[in-house]
Length: 573
Ligand code: FES
Image (cartoon, rainbow, N blue to C red; front, side):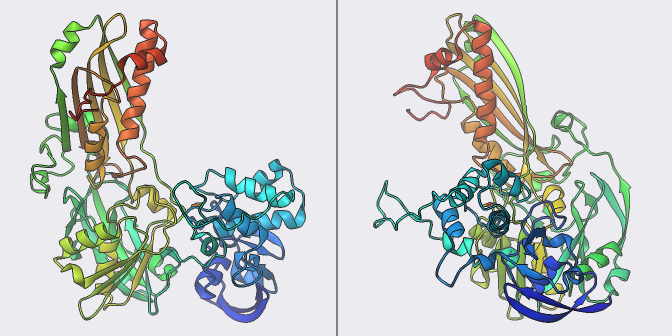
């Protein structure tokens, strides 16, 4: 790749640099010049995390080639800090208004806000919203951010005084606020380890297929490539509750987006080009894409070896032959009797779609397989001890050999619970002779390769008397677990506990089934299990009340649990 010499002034410091012509300004700033306050989340100008000011104008640095910035003055969010240890009015307002949570979006947000105030010192609220529309935030709901900018713009902002010593019910300062508004906070995405290689994935285009042939010889011979792995090189099974997931697909691909090969190379581009040189011949197979179809006798089995996969026998109950990873049953009383006592019986069906968490920082792991057998893992995971425990379990390593470090996490919402990229990146590091390897998922991989909230179908039967007493409730919850059970087994289990809502119902029957399909796999997501089923239960209460001609509020009051009564799980309320 040809190289050009350019001159740049970044936050007042001018340097002359040699840059490849294909390098983006984002790559130059974040990777080349270590301005880690310039974040990234999509690399296609959608998220605004990489916003910088180029000659005063806010731009997405991932959409500008470095050579195009020759002679330019660039300001990152670091320019917002007046001096070390002191915050600007905007930075302090972000902290005081709660405009900073995970903080991954904050540097880009501050750049856009400052650019607005520079060109329009007294913007309207609508102009603030418009100016920040290109900067995504997944944590704050935007309101506190707009409030902070508005207060600074209209001169009403007064920094909060330092709170008194913390006590219950008192004010508290956000301790990590200053690190996040100055861009000093380090996330796994920002971490650079000396000698680090970059990992990339090749994923399946098919929902289900047999891998007939996979040829990595061209990829291995490409410049900068240090390791190429396929499923046959990494014969370990992974899983939180069911050991059903290959590190890379072996023999059979279970969903579109499943990784079938991985590369570690000196640069992102070399790794990407190497994945494109891998030849895979697939034989497409019939996928199962619907939970009802999946549970039928004779349905194609997502995991024919399911009977052996549960390593928590007696706690989780798979049903081999029916694509059920776990069936949680809760019984109270006798629902046949309760339905017989009812004047009317209603049945409603509710669906919740799968939902992606979309953390602004994508899943990232940096792993070093050291020559002494110790393993260093830096990860964006929410559950470092789970990562260590499952990692050691998978590879048969003692716990003291594996160190897991989690810097600041740029949003997780449940999607970073459990173990995800770490085992693969460890295998890449080993294959590359122990060099550290970093793998950061692309936004597409977040949707297609990493887990989402499971879709749910709820079928709720309710027996009621004419005066609005619920005599019996039968609920069936069908979770679309996708190709791997992962955290989804626990989601289905937790859901069953809330499966009849907060109501005193004498006869209840709840069945929560976690069903495999050839789709992206499910995991935890904010209040996992409970909120999805409670949405259906409460919608059911509205519909039954209306059918009875009752006020939905009165219907609920009439059936609420009271002191001394028991929910379906049996403990006195
Ligand atoms: Fe905005 Fe987390 S604070 S993405």
